[in-house]
Length: 354
Image 1 (cartoon, one colour):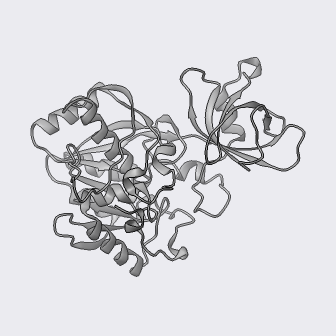
Image 2 (cartoon, helix red, strand yellow):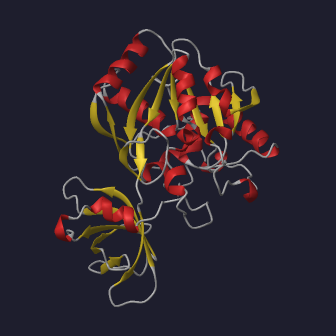
Image 3 (cartoon, helix red, strand yellow):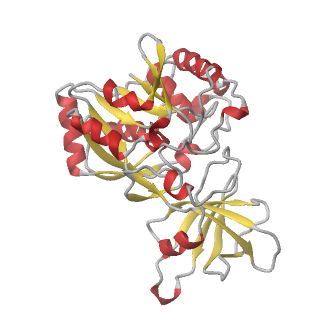
């Protein structure tokens, strides 16, 4: 398929720049994936659409302030570094994206914070502004992530055309986030409140958490013409023994599994393949690229329904949604959402696909 097959027109004013005052105040487009029929609803109706026996799976990753502004040694002008992955072999070493990409060379020293609290050296260079950098160990046993909390910024996506604010520290985070490691929020979860979660559980609906740390694999641009030529970066995930047991039991008894967000879908569908039909507990990495192939239909082995936000044209996230609900169904629903002035992307409205 061509990447251009996943294009749609989106007026810029529909890209949400701020979150709503109430987390659960969003609109929700309800799409039936078999018929393509859709209806306009509110997110607050989501618990009422769940069925007895459903298992709802959340991604409990937590965003950290991964964007750093600083300077190069001996140079003027501000630089920007977006930390994307901490390397397991050396916790001081990170993969990152830098701006301006052409000017920051291997061997350069970078300084962050008013008092140069964090210092790093550029080790290697990669494509599209990618670098590996190593931070100097902090003095007095200071905690690296505590330093990030002081001087780092919330890594809002580039289509939010404003600086991050103190409000974003809380709103660009799900209420159930507790596993630090993401550079972007699993945005379908931003709509949930403790009250909505209580309503789900009061109806007897089972819920479990898994963890996938969102990085470049989710949001990297597609730079090829043919969909199948695109390769995803892997992203680390972890599934607890209790979550694996609950998911496997639901699968064995034919219950419906509902994923909150594309990151949850990709984790579950990767894990079931890695486990040869069984969800295996423990840490791993997901690099499964889900897209609609007209010749070989992607088989969803775990997920039967999902809650998701509206996604960028020609993005891998939109392709995943199209694989579940059908490209024409999804693009028709998106046309309706544009006509009805739904709010798009991270701080926008959502879709429930079943």
